[in-house]
Length: 258
Ligand code: CO8
Image (tube, rainbow, N blue to C red; front, side):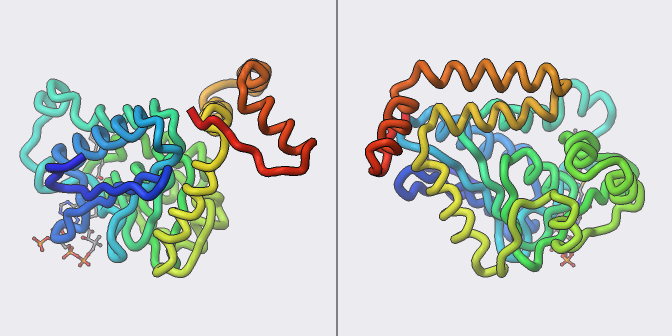
């Protein structure tokens, strides 16, 4: 995977790392960057050697939002005909767990990108917010929906209607972020979490992800039914046999991965 203009990619064992790399624009998300991130995630998700993906930015900015200078000239017909930013939805179809390692600004589309990921590891300097209201618009990459489901109506209304930035302690208290660590340890912690996830059975981790995501999209009864069906089907895998045998034999499991 080479020839990217706006991101850097690397792999470390079964972990893939995608680093947003538009430092002069605080990693503002333009169409090119979206295409590259989505393409890289698609490729890593199809790679049997990869078990978890980390998406990160710089220490100053995970991403300061959609690229305002790119959006500035667009009118209604442009955004409708281009299906502007719809491609980000593809991240939700990745089976591989994705971890956002967030330092600095995660605003607008940056906050939405973090919320498109499965786990958010945040640095002490992280700032989350949906400031689109200051530009005369509202979130457009799922922010009004995912933020509301993540933190509830009261806080989502507050953040989306005032456009204020939220410090990391508030984000952690609200359950938006999974862990807060010193800023300089964000990427290393995310890599460690990713390596831990990548060491498990891939089928089990992707089903675990699917089951949790189902909670966001269905009723409790339907979600529990979906979980049960995923749970039962794992008993058809060699990884279930291996995992339970390893426990009984007091040894580490050797999962097939995929
Ligand atoms: N877009 C484009 N350029 C940006 C962006 C952005 N979102 N954010 C920062 N930049 C650029 C600045 O223009 C500046 O460039 P230059 O040096 O050429 O002037 C450079 O990055 C550095 O920025 P600042 O000088 O402003 O840095 P500061 O440290 O002073 O401030 C802030 C940092 C507070 C993050 C500030 O840059 C800021 O407020 N940025 C905009 C934040 C924002 O409003 N984000 C929301 C964007 S809208 C959005 O995300 C909507 C998504 C939904 C679209 C879906 C369509 C369907």
